[in-house]
Image (cartoon, rainbow, N blue to C red):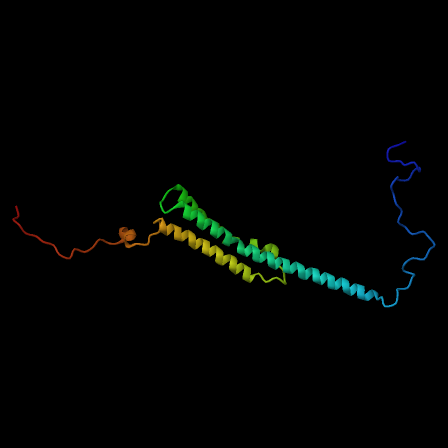
Length: 179
């Protein structure tokens, strides 16, 4: 027996013929039962598709709000890491502070890409985007605050002494015997 040939001869072994060659009446020839309307079935399909679209837009809105709230978790984690790093200037505290500044900046640059999968005509993304931006600005403020506590921001007058002109001498004295 050849490979691919069935016992029945030249046809395929597991092939099924779906063509209707019978003389029995088809389901199209039988009238619909009383009270059944095919137009109502089509309308139900449209309402089901509308409900699916509404459910999808609700899902997208919910996920957009979840993405918008994600920086809050990062904010708490970064605050704890900064607290653990202490207030002295060393490699670990500078690395944590740099990370606290870099993450919000890079997230703010990619706001459009973050919310791209949730863009829909029925989904309002302004609120989630504003929350996302506000939380990332809060993270940026936390990083700037850490720079200030480390003493790396010029906030005192003594930090700007090199740019001040020399003070005018108000008085001078002279005397004694010139030699």
